[in-house]
Image (cartoon, rainbow over all chains, first blue to last red; front, side, top):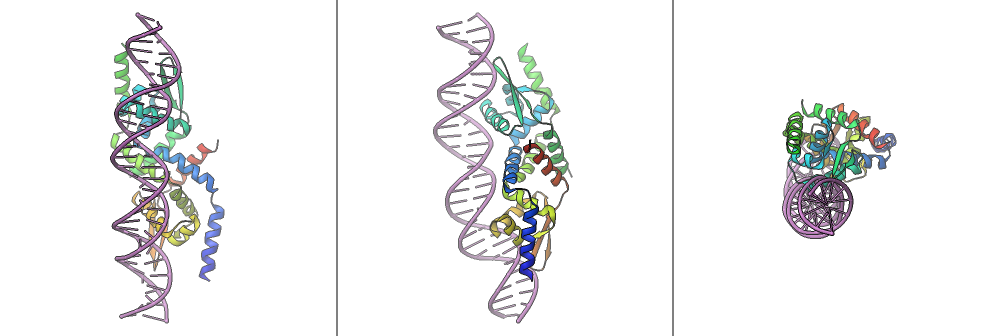
Length: 110
Length: 110
DNA sequence: ATAACACATGAATGTTTGTTCATATGTTCA
DNA sequence: TGAACATATGAACAAACATTCATGTGTTAT
């Protein structure tokens, strides 16, 4: 009966999926990649660590904007800070980031 | 002079980065992964193709909501549709998706 | 101590986005 | 043809988000 097929398919599929909580976390993680300012910040940090003022000039946005976005990146453990005198130097926390970037680029360039 | 260092660093970093347009596209692409409903839809489709009504039951949302989100996924070439009678069967378009998922999961599970 | 600088943060604003309801389109079957 | 079903779509609404301005915090150097 079609009803049973439907119910079975729904149930078995749900059973094979990761925990809902995990998938919500995953969405939150990718959300960070979904903004062009943050993408450009991360991209700039591929080369070397940079202080806030440099990043702001590179992406062409207010220092304040960049600081807010760096906080978002920090909260998701994507960047780390090193304080040196008056300046804060940011760098990438994780080597997954570059791979995720590459895969995204592969997808859009085809 | 510090001013020159700053300017040089900014310029050389900008020069090494991909085109700004590309990075905007990349952000739009990742934006699609940044919603838990869409993440769960894609996750369900890892197993096999599914029609809209099944997907709605699996993720526990309105059919309308799922249709809207499937359109977003279609627009970014992440899923494809196969029409069979009254039903539309959706499946994943791209094998990058699973790898991107895996990397995201690796990041959050540590 | 105080001025100048680098960065962080709170409040306010406008925009984007996800969801729902209602309805339209398209398909099957009697 | 008309009823029932599956899906798509438009309008409306609320919630989330990115940016900016103004200001606070912390550091250096005079």
